[in-house]
Length: 332
Image 1 (tube, rainbow, N blue to C red):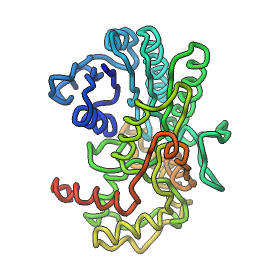
Image 2: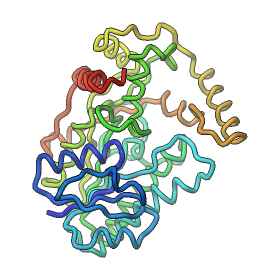
Image 3: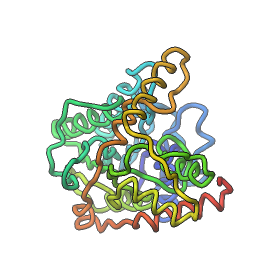
Image 4: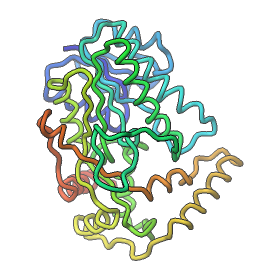
C-alpha cells in the first residue's frame, strides 16, 4: 500500500513514519515544507512530497496514486500574533487534505486529531459517544482542533469519504522535542532540577499515553477500522500529583515541594501575553494554557481496546522508557 502521511517532520509523525518503515512493507509519500525534505527518513520506500497544508495543489500532487492518507500534521503552539494562522492550518488545512484524498480516490483516510477536540471531563472519563459540543475555548490550538474535528466529520458524511478519526491523549516519549512533545521536555527540566515549583494543587487529572502506543493504534486502525469509526487512543488517567510522584520514583530526583496557586499562575500567563504583544516573543505560558492545565482531561479507550486490539503502557512503564531514552541521548 502507498500511504501519504502529513506531519512526518514532527514528534508523532516521525515516530509513525519510522514504525511504518520498520514493521510494514508500505511505501510512504511524506509531506514536508520547502527546505525540510532533508529531515525525512532516508529510505528507498520514501518519496518526499514538497508542499504545505495551506497549498491545496501541492497536496493533490502528493496524494496522487496513494491508496491511503494519514493526516497527522497540525500547528501546535500556545500563542501566535496572527490567530488566523491556526484556522488556516488546523481547520482549512485539514479540509484541504481531505479534499485531496477524496479527489484521489483514497480507500482509507485516517485523521489523527487530539483529545482537546473532545473537551474536558469533570466526572467520569469521556468516551467517543459522549456529547462534545461546546462554545467555550481556552486557546486557539484547542479551538481549532475542536472545529477541525467537527468539519472533518461533516465532510465525510456529505462526501462518503472513508474517514476514521483518532484522538490521542497527552503523548510523551522518545522523539523530537517539539511543542507536541511538551511532556518529555518537562521531564528533562525535572531531571535537570530546573522545576522549582508545581503549578496548581496537583488534583487535575490527565490521560497520559506513551507515543509508541499511539503509533501502534494508528497502524491497527489502518488495518482494522471501518469508515466512520472514531477511537480514543489513551493511556493512564492520573493526577498531576501522581505524575510527579511517579517521575520522582523513576528518576530518583526529588519532585518540587512547593506549588503555585492557579490564580498566581494565571496572572503570570496574563503578564506573559502582554509582553508577547509588546515584544513579539513567544510567551512562556498564557492564560489559556493555564486554564487547560487546571482542568480534568480523562478518557476511556475501551472501544479501541475492544475493536482494534489497542493496549497501552502504564504511566510508570512509559516514563521509565522515556527517562532511559533521555539518559541514553545525554539530554539530562
